[in-house]
Length: 114
Length: 113
Image: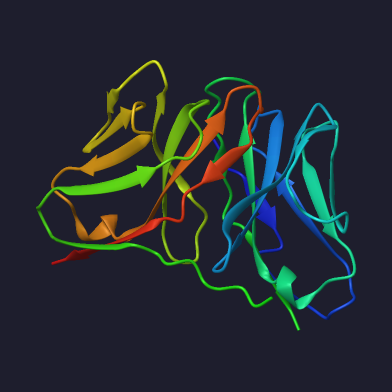
């Protein structure tokens, strides 16, 4: 069974640009969540999608947004990029929501903002 | 202001010894916990999980202990191998928050051959 797939793996963007990252969950998984990982802040929750609806959102500005499609694939978008947005963006998928649902991570998308 | 890098605890062990990695979690309402292993350049990999109605769970070479009284979690790795060298994170999930997890700062484990 294929794991969580994220594309692109590496990208470099300029301040002020916008970026879209893609995530394909494990087959059969319906929940997708996104995390940002930086040396300064560690792993931080961005948002979670289930059945094409955002269910939870972390403490990030409105420049960070996402969506989920009917096949459970998800995208996240960051607009008006800032240098501080340089990070590893991780997507995680889970079968469902609720108590005791394990989340499985992809390899991440490395974003560098210059 | 300028952000300061997280201080990552480190642990060095001899190959073949047992390792114990500790984690203090923050919320007494957390009811599900996961340990992840992250190797350089890769995403976090699931190791083992435990629910709040348990205090111990064993996997292959790994054991997780949960002490809800002091909000403490530990991961024990038996017969540590060089391939175990990585950063280990504990993650906690609060009941009713879906799949939103809060992660610890991580512990860097180095296995000395």
